Image 1 (cartoon, helix red, strand yellow):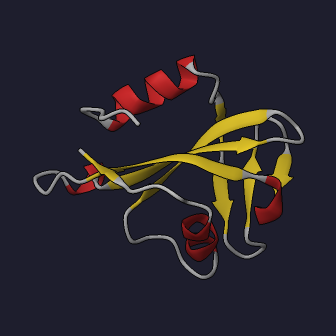
Image 2: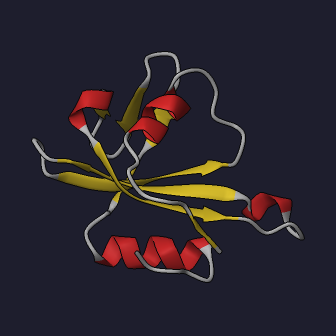
Length: 106
C-alpha cells in the first residue's frame, strides 16, 4: 500500500496501474455505476482492492476516501471518490465489509 501526498497523486498512480474507470455510488439500488461503460456493478460483482483516506482539516473539500475497485468477471478496474461522511444508507456498509485493509491517512 502506498502513501500518497494528495488525492490527485493517488488517482494518477491508480490510473497508471489500470484503474481507469470512474465509478459513482448509486445508493438507492446499492450498486456502483460507470457512465463511461453504462455498467452497474452489484456488491457481489466487485472487490475493493485498496482504500485511501485523505484528511486535511485546513481544506474541508480535501476530506475524502478513494476506493480502488476491480470486477474480476468483467475485468473492469476503476476508482470511486467520496467525501467523508456523505455516504448514506447501505452502500458505505457494503464497501466497508469488502475492505480487509487499514485506511491510509495522508
